Length: 254
Image 1 (spheres, rainbow, N blue to C red):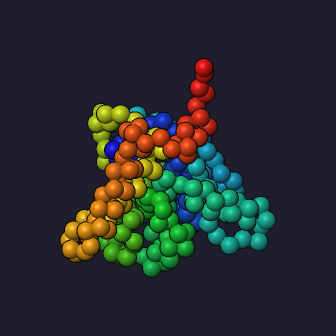
Image 2: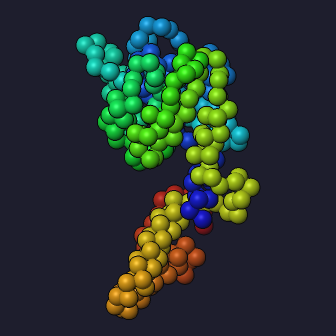
Image 3: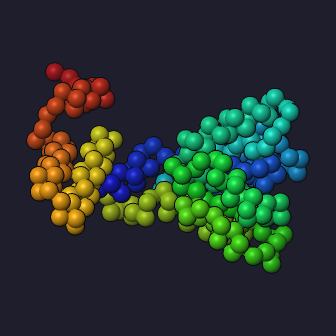
């Protein structure tokens, strides 16, 4: 059910996907590749993109909101500084972050420092080693070994489209949470999601108490808490908070 919420929410509202990285990593070229359109201005001059460029694309039935951002670097230019601030704000909001880098400009240790500095642990992260048509002999293992576990590393050539399908597959898998579109028996809303998460926590507590043979009254309390959360979904429990939530989100007639 929790997996179905992630997929159902993605279908309803779209997946916020932010493209970030240092200047001249070809982020705008990547956006154009994903859109199959020359939407973003592409130039060899670093710092061409100074504001966000936002576009939507449908990938295998899922709606993605792609945001191309200004290159992340220190700058004396006030406009570029504002662009970097805005880029970091969008990164914090991202469901999926695509971090693009040039292997000829950034070694594995520097890349890890860049990723860590963005504090992306709440997002799913795809790290793209771009311009790989220029570095056919480049060893990717050094990057794989040092990147955080939540990062997926892909080699790509955005200009030629090399390995584009690999990126599309990863985006789709992250967007669906590895749940098939046809496998959703019903859609759950944010209120259901909250109750399910709390019920899951209660069940995990109960499991821990069973394994450690701790006091049965604590075990019973965990099971009671789980039952309560599920009852809020089934309608067996009607609290003022739930009613208030319903009336605030729906227009209910006489």
